[in-house]
Image (tube, rainbow over all chains, first blue to last red; front, side):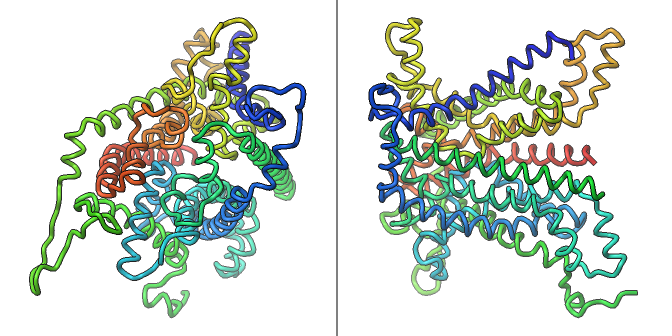
Length: 275
Length: 304
């Protein structure tokens, strides 16, 4: 690359990443600030872990985190099953009745504004309750169903794009050797796309763990999730405990992402060596 | 010749079984709800639980009355709040998309042209914020932008300003929040597109006497058209209906349609009006969604 151009590009990248990371770093730094004013650094008493202690004793946040965790785990598991089936169908069967609709139905949730999805799901649950008595009221079940509906679309994309790049001849060879389709799927396909399925699970987990809008529409009394509690606090301004929560989230997510990508890099190297 | 499995005889095939579950799920929980929204957008508001009147009612013993009420839609067009919120949302989403493109394009370009080892790290750095909570990342900007926030403190201590700037709860804050939150959605499809680019084309153009900027303008830019379109749709469509960012950063005057819908639903309990807003928004966004899908189809067809 010519140098003038590369200087321009490197400057752009540096500014872009500064833009992306300064807000995140500021939350981490200020989570150690003793001052209740949050953004005014209290040099005398900082850094401190006092807000970390306060967060651990905040019942409201802990209860909400427990609900969020339950919803996120069930959602991720369900979404992976539905999304893998849809992704497999779309990647492997070039023609079937309803392919166009399935494709549209798995693309639309990715871009649909959440207020629309949330409202429409709530109205469905209300109408279903009137018609058949299920779901009785709203809570964890309705929230999980709502989350699965948009999370599975993301899993579908991840699985579908992984399947599009993998060598179909492996599956064909197994079929030629007499393996039944189901056996081929479990013995050949599943192990190869496992990294994609794992990242789909993690993605579905985070989408649910972070969701505010669809949860607010589909939750009932006593089932406030972590983002709902955070939102009601944040509306009133900055709070030191939220900085702590953000720092913990960022820590866990970074470790997870780095771990998974190292593991995936290793897996793809192995794949190249054995191929 | 293979003998048909007994299940196949009644029209059940392995293929069908694979897709039937996700298909039915999405049909029930994604498509049917929109039909219900449409239905409720034509009902009367009622002081009951749920707060709307049924469309179809038995009057007397043998007569069925269907009452289709256009008042909610008429209301949207008579009260200027809704139309100006809608127009403002489109404007905000459009300008934000433009800024995402301006910031995201050089980044995606740089990442695509970096050494493979650096490339993976840079890509990871783009994806990482996407995995951390949107709500928390938007919240971070409150701390940066408020009157005694980080940016004002820094500018005051350097002596660039003498009194704090009002940034939080302004349109500026809302734009910053939207561009910031949606930037990864612009970079990733652009990167995926630019990564497939044949850079020898640029070298050939330059060998033939093209200036670097000319080569970029005549070759790279047109070839990355689908990436730009896909990224722009991924930013524009959800940004039109965005609720969290205007609610946290935009202040009480930030008129966005997603917020109007939210308030109609949660504060006014006007479910039919909220439904009519949702339908209006959908009518505007569906063409963009179809456009996005056709761009995606072109992209994956080009990849093969």
